[in-house]
Amino acid sequence: MPKSPKKHRVPWSNADLKALRKLAGQRKSMRVAALSLKRTPAAVQQKAFQEGISFRSINRRRRRR
Image 1: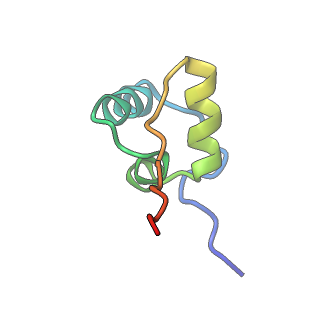
Image 2: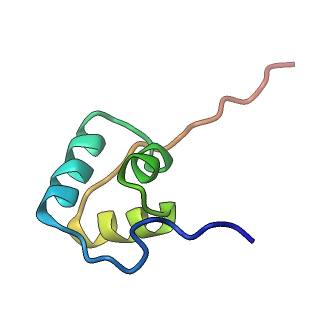
């Protein structure tokens, strides 16, 4: 069974929100932000949407034939 995140059900602090904005400003992915904040990607995605913060999307290039 996978381990639960260390901050499971812990409210977001002002420092967490500041770090979230900083990571988004550095054009990091949501997954990297989640690892940095020790939260799940879903929790980071939900909070970013609530706060109006956008993260970069990972565009995978199609292979040319």
